[in-house]
Image 1 (cartoon, helix red, strand yellow):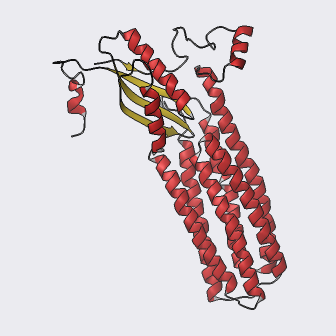
Image 2 (tube, rainbow, N blue to C red; image 1 turned 60 degrees about the vertical axis):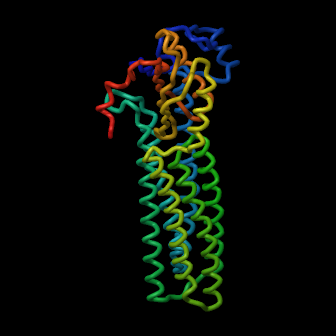
Image 3 (cartoon, rainbow, N blue to C red; image 1 turned 180 degrees about the vertical axis):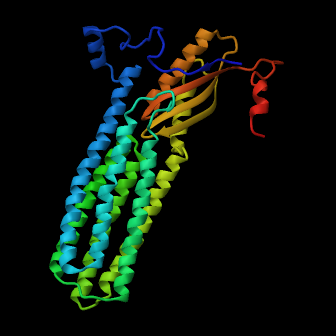
Amino acid sequence: MSERHPHQHGAHPHPHPHPHGSSTGPRRRLAHLLSPHSHDTADKVDPALESSARGMRALWVSLAVLGATALAQAGVVAVSGSVALLGDTVHNAADALTAVPLGIAFVLGRRAANRRFTYGYGRAEDLAGLVVVLVIAASAVFAGWAAVGRLLDPRPVTHLPVVAVAALVGFAGNEWVARYRIRVGREIGSAALVADGLHARTDGFTSLAVLLGAAGSALGWRAADPLVGLAITAAIALVLRDAAREVFRRVLDAVDPALVDRAERAVREVPGVREVGELRLRWIGHRLRAELAVVVDGEATVRQAHAIAVATEHALLHAVPRLTAALVHADPAPAPGETDPHLALAHHLPA
């Protein structure tokens, strides 16, 4: 059976053909400045920490903005009695508080892998995404409950101009936060942060819906405010569906098929690779890992097969965004009459 190659750049003592080799001093610093990439293990930690730091910064900035928005709206709810604005306020507050589990996840994700958590703690981010989904669901239930209660027990809404201003403030705050979270989440590959950004965007549109409730109340239609509250509940349910789909796909190791196609094309272009076998990609937090098999010349030496595996990982690191490592398995090309080298594993495979 062919050798399994768990290659990590920087993990072997062999010379590396890049200018970021083992030397130190001015030469290495100059090479680092001139080279657009680096695959040494120590060097790869920095982008990972940087992406986590960017995620943390996005969370705390959005927490401050949404917290201030929710406090301003809460004051208006207290004097106006608008359940539509109440639903919007609760949702904004819940959205702000989701920064807490996500922040904890980003902090945990910085911890190094160990003998118990051999892949590190990146999965904490996916668990935080589940918490975000639960918070969205809880806010939808509360908003719906408040709206139904007001329909059954109608009450006038006062201070309508202030309610309208609070709705506009809610829209502006949420849309800014949504754009910020979604942009940073996509740049660092965080499904949880993107889901939270979608959550904020829906909050912005529900804030605008509060304006309709205020307009209806101004015209003397008491049911307008609770009906808008129910519409807000429906909007929250829609974003719940989208966020849940995004997060659960990540939990189930789903990746964009285009990434798999891109990886396969890159591997096929590596000199010495005759064929690409099974290729798997999985997210660990907001970073990717790859596992794949390549077919090489059956007469290749161990060193030659190792060099092809190194070149394969190198090509993948360039081709696949946010990929941090690849585990490459080299299979020999079959020879006429040769027994399948994997035959000994056949009885371990599922039928």
